[in-house]
Length: 411
Image (tube, rainbow, N blue to C red):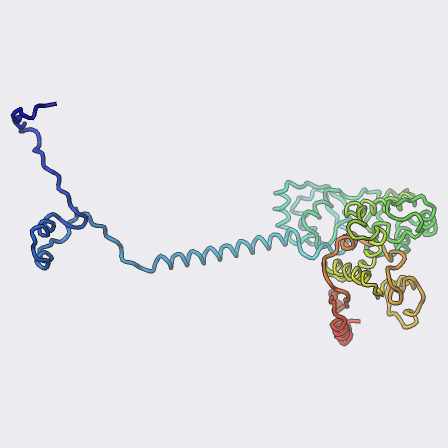
């Protein structure tokens, strides 16, 4: 520390002279500041104020424009258009992979030649109506690493199948060369199904097949032992058997398949789920099978109509049950037909018929145990091509729709 009485040291000429800092207010130079301190008039100060120099501390702001909001609006529109396009593409692809409406009728057969590629198989399935898009099928199978598949005859394909449903049939493989095919359609009566088996196995007579069912040699988890009628408890499907199969082997295979499907759908918990026995639900499913139109959601709606009418203590009024009791599958019911004292005359008597009226398929069985909520109590056929019904909870609306359908010759 130096003594304040020491004389000042001489300045080194090589060092810059200390200059006190100049403080400048933002946007005002020093000369203007001095004018303010000297009391110079305001007008004179404005005249003397110099133009700002490049090194002055000013911030230049761009002129306000409307370009920003416009760009944002254009960007937003582009995003929306692209988003809609992507969603549309995803929806289209989803419908190709899994078409709406559910599976259709069985395809007679698809023969895959030896050496067929996945592309060729996709083309065969598209031509047969099994899938909707052969190219998408090729991409989908490549993504899932599905295939390759064996050449041969495939008999379990259905129209309007999803890609996964078609792949499942291919994975099961073709039928053996020495196999005998038995095809039982959904909604067939037991007597007709037995005839179909006899047509495939002429050595097994209709009488022998019926006697095998009545003998107790065939068993079912869900058919009550005290009910001898097997209607409704052989699963309708396409089967392959060796040419020396016995009546018991064929019928037990079909009964076991029915048990497996009912297990999958939860029929072992029928009382807890619907407050009705498994037998009653199979009976309801058989009514659905004979009554349903083409739209996939009709099965559930018909199931709900049946349950609503049962809960209300009203006759079901389902003509398919009346026809079954008369030993017929179609035709117009006459006044005398409707007066018959038959337990299948559900126009005259309340409640379910005593047995199922056909062999119901999986979709109808599923509708019976898991119907949608709804207040419908009536339905009427409104178009025949495709078969479609109108559903309502109003008797007045039902009558109006019925009269309209009759006037158009629907029935």
